[in-house]
Length: 432
Ligand code: AMP
Ligand code: ZN
Image (cartoon, rainbow, N blue to C red; front, side):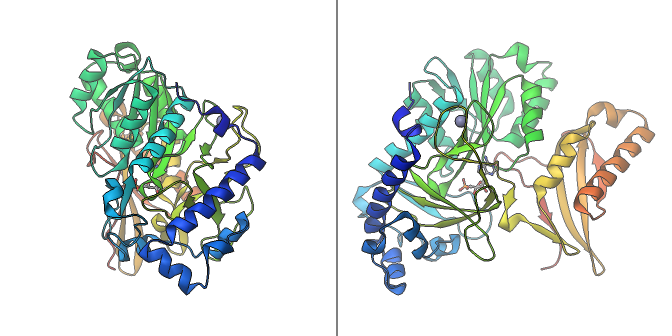
């Protein structure tokens, strides 16, 4: 049982009081670090100046570059002796950022993941198979600790090795899994190859999906294929990892745990706060971190606060699923496009398979978007004119949505490269 009822349903006023106390404590702790000590001095700011929650805006933002430039220990607010764990981001560009935790930090993080999993419906009686990479990536150990705290029998399967995953699910009657959405679509292909149907041949009833952007359409597809409910899980290593924001049984936005984080949504250009309900960049501040507090971190993730209260009774606000990152926006012929717009359209079109990749190319002076799309086996082996009709439909539908005409190639199911971790959706071959 892991339902922190008092904290999860606390009224907004009490929550604000708790946040202010924790923010003041966090800033006092943060200035012990080399980085924030200097940042506060440079800004002429003292932890005592944080008198109200609004005063948070006086603190300068922290960016991924700040973390990189002060690598590895510039953000430590305690002595190294106090640390028990290190994790890192899965970033593919530049040096990965590292985060350090004290014993208390790991404990608080574990509570958050346990609380999130319990909220979605995981119970002590469940068998939980964690199909995420164990290691520096936070998705493996983060969920592992959380599931154990709920008391579920936890299988540390790790990522990849699809046939063994299916075998484990069947042998040990797995009821809940944690899986990357793009991998869930691929795994279904392996079920088919083995002549198995997840609904009939396994007992999996729920899945936690996250770590990469995915649309509501993609979630629906996964739920239909497997016949289970899939809950969106959002997190980032700088804010621990999983357990930052999570869907409740309503599956309508993710509760972001405001007793552990202060949440701001800003306009990424003007850096000013946007009103609730408007999309912007998510900025977060840790409220319980001891080892390495991070203040006003610019996540680069785009989302909005959903207005209104959640029928589940939890008072922590909800964010909408992430619609993109400020740094994965593609600009072609002056049009701004996010990969998720393309994913969403593709997932709506019958006949489209389970994987796709976007290649950005340059032809002469022109930028070209070339999309390779896997199609369902029946289509691929069927009549050529049907395949051509599908191709044309994809081009037309995308064109009306993203306003440029992509070049589309249809390819055989399961023929595009797969990754064990987050899917690589865009390959930019244009000269820099
Ligand atoms: P990392 O720190 O390497 O774990 O990566 C964190 C990043 O993964 C976030 O900043 C998001 O861009 C992305 N991410 C994690 N979970 C989700 C999710 N549920 N939906 C969309 N993007 C996600
Ligand atoms: Zn709810």
